[in-house]
Length: 452
Image (tube, rainbow, N blue to C red; front, side):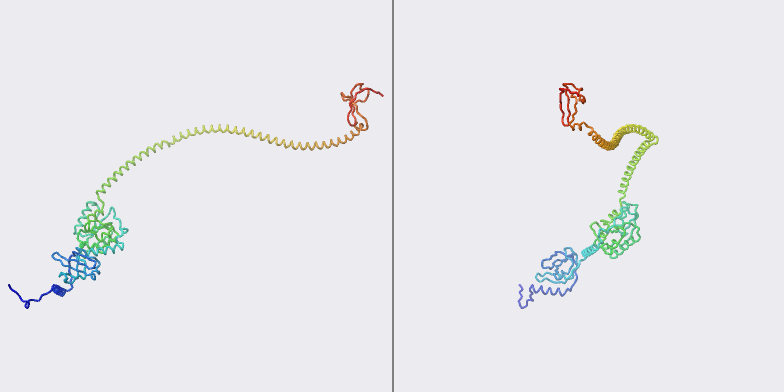
């Protein structure tokens, strides 16, 4: 057994000292540097610091990004995100863990591109490039189709195959362009502008096959978006696969999932057209037959109507109507004559009555006039007679026996015949006589006759 004495023992480090000196050595040996990797095991506790690991295909390393640095970022890291970090190499003394102290972080690859895509998408949407009101209708029966794509890719072959199958009679103009790389976007813009300048087509297909986000990036460029937006020709986008979306898809008048689908949207199906034509032909044949039937019925009706309206038939009907009218007129004349006779009798009777009344009125007026004249005449006669009577009365009064009677004489008459007695021989004894005095009468009987 071999033993050593303390006097010759090497210097002993504590764990703390060892970790501290190791940390110092690491920080001095590695200056500020950039490290690329994929994030995993990301965590963000309440302290505001971020902790995660960076890894590649063969190794990984712990990382820490303190709150004073991560608050400057415009995104939040996620597991699986490919990033580029600016960092310092260090060691966490408490656990002796080798780690990176991250001061800045950038997205790398598709992550960075997707971030840029979302930013540009929001900007263009705010400017109205995605507004449905601006989208132009796709013609249902195009006279010419333009295709903006690469002439060497699979997309053009798929498009031409579909066009030939669906609508082989339509002419196709290809505007060749790059569809990948940094110089692709300007060529796409030039192709779209050329198609609008020439105005040979009434619909454009902007297409390319599938690929990564980086491969499809030319169709996310702002210049391409504005060229599609300003196009007077309706544009169908057919870029990538069904799950791929680009800025061009949002700006285009219609988006197709694939280049082949874009060709289908741009053309009618000849099979459907033939079926529609056959249906129209059948409908037209049916309508023609129905029209002919209606014409035949109309001709039959016109012939019948013509027969009814024939001059000879109309003349016969008019003559029949005339005979009926003459008969009716005679009946009406007879009725009218009878009515007039009755009215005449009534009028005559009324006239006679009125004439009688008129004559009676005239006679009455004449009679009244004559009566007035007669009364006047009678009054005059009466006055005259009265005057005459008065004169005669005066004379009579002078000659009246009453005057004699007033002087004491009397008038004697026989009682049986009122004969005035002038001689005594006119009565015999026993006769009844009446003696009229000035006032009153005396009935007497002759008892004695004295003759002087």
